[in-house]
Image (cartoon, rainbow, N blue to C red):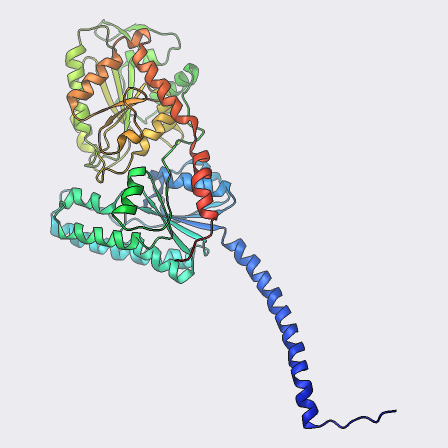
Amino acid sequence: MESEKPITEKSIETLAPEIVNNDHVEKKVTEEEDSSSSSSSESEKLKNVVLVVLGDIGRSARMQYHALSLASNGYHVDIVGQNETALKQQVLDSPDISIADLTTFPPLSTDTNTIVFTLYAFLKIIYQIVQLIVTLCFTVDRPKYIIVQNPPSIPVLAIVKIVCAIRRTEMIIDWHNYGYSILAMRLGEDSSLVKIAKDYEKYFGQMASKNICVTDKMAKDLSKNWGIKKPIVTLHDKAPKSYKKLSTLESVEFWTELFSSEQLKRKVPDSYIHMLETVNGTKTIDQNGRSVGKPLVLTTGTSWTADEDLYLMLNSLKQYNEETKNDDRYPNLLVIITGKGPMQQEFEKTIEYLVLEKVFITTAWLSPENYPRLLGSADLGVSLHKSSSGLDLPMKIVDMFGCGLPVLSYKFNCIEELVKPGVNGEVFESSEELTKQLKVIAENYLDNGNVLRNLQIGAEEFKSVSWEENWDQLVLPMLESKQKKD
């Protein structure tokens, strides 16, 4: 039997690597288990997405649709913005969508001079910076992406990029328009502030890891003139599946509810009400004893700002009235203008005592549920949006098409990506052109005129792809793809 060897310093040195190696193996296994658990937990957390709307969330239908699409694909969504106007009921009902409310900075009068406006803008930016940093860093869970609506650009793009660096997440910009171009409408193209705003927007725009925009022309402009090399997806606005043309009975029910509510600013004449609340009505007698038929209902939505010329439409309606008031081939027009904004009261004073034989105009503020019912019951839509950049498209037209409503739109650079003249609507550049188009469509309307019916068919075809389908095909793959390193 071999005697035991004494333990020497040399034998300890020989055994040490084995002891260390065994310890290393155990430590490695433990680290891998912890890493696996941590990775799984981190993966769960990164199913969060934050949407940033530096404005009223209720007026940003596109961002609400983003939230609903994200939620339906397994993401938890935090919407950071001002919770003022009523949100869509589906957003409120979703257990996967939360609202992080930003307090509104006191508004400024529209008739202030440039110095006061500049001081006000500076204070507002400081206020917004503090709110955004606190909310994005401490209120919401760490997200996989922060999707920010642009415009506005200042200060939100810089703040979101800084937060993304701190929280190790990615910034996606949803380009609705260019912020500097809207500022230029107020201060002029040559303003130094506008030039600074453009440089700022371009600089931080290049820092987004992914981009979404509203038109093909904007995508090309971002790539060619803004130097953006990261992925750009054009997501044309589409109406959700719930938007539709209402049946006759559904329309009668809607008109009955609307006319008995307080949602309309002016009381609609009884002769108009009677015809719209009657399923088979074709003729009635107005207050002047004249025989009148069912009115053609025209609607437009507006934010009551300088980029929409309501007076162009008003002049056109006066001209229509003058040219058709003694011609029974043309129907009365009931014009319903929806929306809220700074120039609303001034316009309402203009029409308050306006008396036209064949046109009645009223403003309205409708709930998110009643707005598509109005579009689904109306006959014709009008868009007065004048794009500040020439590269964006108004969501209101998409909503109208979603309800089978043809649209007469003010003409600008890329409007024909949406409105196809003679197919789903027409485009105009003056009140005279709009009047001519109204007369062509309205003529023989009471005898089921073919012009309006054909345009309605064209508008219905726009719905062949819904927002949900479009988003799943274009945005979802972009979100779930791995970002290539430069």
